[in-house]
Length: 264
Image (cartoon, rainbow, N blue to C red; front, top):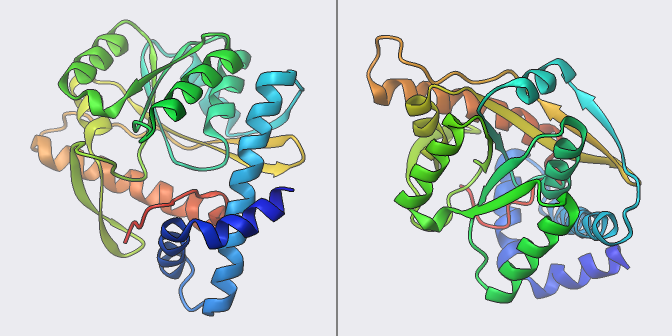
């Protein structure tokens, strides 16, 4: 059923298909066009699996197996009083937040782009509340300055903030960065927040590796600190470190990168 749905959406979701094709041409250069069409169907199928797994976990409370890569970094994150988690539209980040909150008994404040449809937004909020028993709270990037002050206060109170940093949606703050040797714009808000709150950024990803089986991947924290350089230079250096980390993850796990808008 999932593969059939992926095939249907390959033809029905033309904007997402075209965006994935453009992104794949950059991530996997030199690939024949026909092979990239098949890869798009594979990405759609993985997205279908992520939605299905999240629903199974939320409604039927089925057990999921997961591996931890760089578990020591995850324990360091869980023990911190205030931290920023930077992730991507990849794998199953909603399920990953639920598993992290469950394993480490920590609450997470998740920031995401607003859903274009009101009913879809209501469904997403309710789904997260059900699957995490209230351990994950959602804020929307469209809330502007009010959200920024709220997040800063949350960090200073010792909370963990989770933000998706692999694309720009709407009117959020952004800055140019090199990504796969191309200049793209990525959100710079997490790095400004890190600099002001003096809080490290932890790159964290979750990818599906089998039937009801996931891997939570942690990478070395990014420190956006005051080191004598200008504010802009510190933020640019931290963003470039994030770009290299994201590039390596996307190159390895491209079938689970749900970049349904053109990046390049």
